[in-house]
Each structure stands twice: as C-alpha cells, then as structure tokens.
Length: 104
Image (tube, rainbow, N blue to C red; front, side):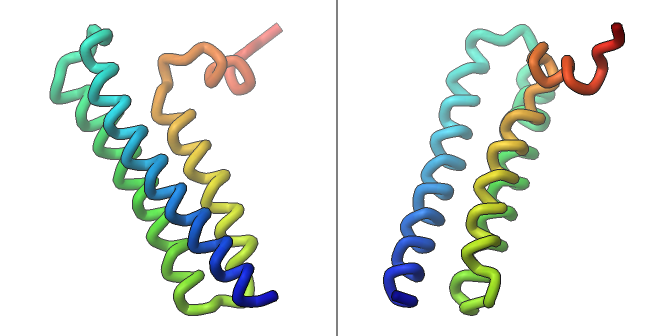
C-alpha cells in the first residue's frame, strides 16, 4: 500500500509541475489582451506567482522524497496553495475582491 501511495503522490506532483508551466505559458499569451505595461505584467502576473508556485511544489516534492510522515497532507495542501496563489495573483478579478471588501 505504501508503494502505491508514493507513486500516486509522485504523479500528483508531476501534474502540479505541469500546471505551473501551463499557467505561465497561458499568462504570457494573455498579455496580448491586457492593457498593463509589459514589465509590470511580467513581474506581478507571471514571475512572482510562478516562483511562489514552484516553491510550493518544490517543498512538497522534498517532503515526498524524504518520506515525511505527513506527505499526503502536504501534497493536498500544496494543491490548495497553488490554486490560491493563482487566484490571488489576479487582483483585478471581481470575485477575489468581493468576499473581503464587500460592505452592505
């Protein structure tokens, strides 16, 4: 059973790496539809979220390789943090602003 969990965690982490790469490529393509200056767009929308995402996955990768006792929890939490990273790297989205800044 342990071997199957290790393989599954490895596959999940590989998918996380793929998601990071695809997100960077998609964000670079989306620049064509943006009014933001190139330097600002690259730093705040591509580089910073990409590095944060890569650090999250790298940390989870190290935990799985070192056979940490909480590796399953760490892999799941890494997925959540990646999603939050990409959601909050777009502060111009209205759905991100609503839960925190809506006043009735």
